[in-house]
Length: 489
Image 1 (cartoon, rainbow, N blue to C red):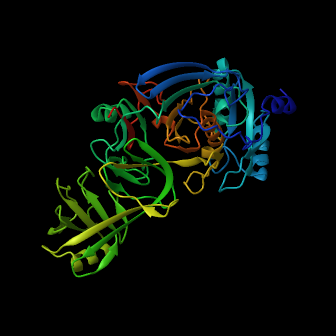
Image 2 (image 1 turned 180 degrees about the vertical axis):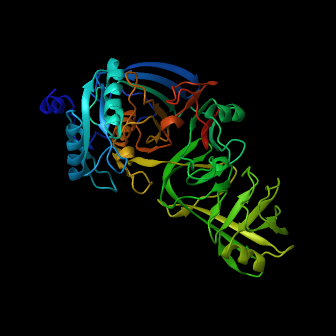
Image 3 (image 1 turned 180 degrees about the horizontal axis):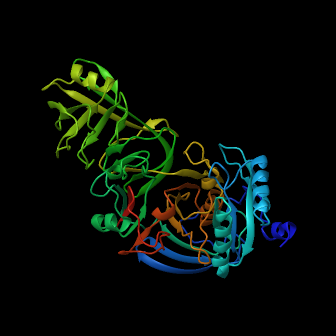
């Protein structure tokens, strides 16, 4: 196969444009759109609707067809599957020295609201149909034997032009007729990861989805910790990453916004100090608050001040012990430990004051028992327009913006209705997932005027009426950090 023929076979759109879409007309209730599916060739989707309970409908949606196949991608010295032009050209020469024909592919990652576009290059070998994956694997093996690092790629995952297919589940909760409420849960503890279905069943939810991202870069036993703000029943259990997207739940209302949190410890001698974190591993010179929901021991190598429900210091202890029910622990190391030893004497009072601020309104949220907060991953839609805040929300990479993954999406409409959606992916020939641009287009198509991306990939799970209704890409449910629950009352 010539390089020209191969390049033609691999030709794809360089980027998905952030196209304007007409504003959704305000409705008295949330309705599934009658327009063509917004992705790919914009075909008429097939859908099946099931009424879950009053005000809640589940839609099983399928669209598109499979035309993508496989190629072999040559990795760059960095280990990435793309690089700058000189690096990519050097890789082409190495492939041809190994007796194979390589294609140099230019790829443009689209610009988003807070990150410019990026042009990179990929080096690829061969093009095989969906049923010929073994042939691609055989070619990859030959290249590995020649000393090249490669991987077999399904082209539907690229995030460029595709015909699909897509397998989507959508839950529409009508603000006009829904009589239940929304809540967040971290399961049995902050530290532990649990499946959405286990948390949903424990909370007696009729619908549930996985929540925000959790910390995969901490100790294995602590990886249930949310990356961002978490409030459950009015209790702040994880601090915000300032300015990142979140969904604020109160009763049967849901609002998407950006948050920051401030936590301060105030000793009875008047000394004040910032509390750096809540229910997470502590770093050098930090002061971290642990609540009874933490579910793990405090870190070793510091000082713990144990507080009762009134804020009275019941004792100072060496760190590395559990948090007893009805207590909180201020843990410090280095400078944080010094502050505790100087201002948290036994029987003294230490008030811990927590504040959660809505950055759109500049007002603090009242931490009442009906308040729940789940951190989002990336803002997608704001005031009816595509606004992808990938950089602010920590996901401005090629992999996260352009490539397709399973997605869990949350949106609100003009009248306050809630839309929850999962787009399954990583299942060649069955469903391709979505990139950020496609996810935003999809939520606008559904009628969302505000929308965010929650955790996705293998975490994507939608629980409806006692079972998971989507197909998690791991083949089974993954344990996650938190979940959003839709309660019948």
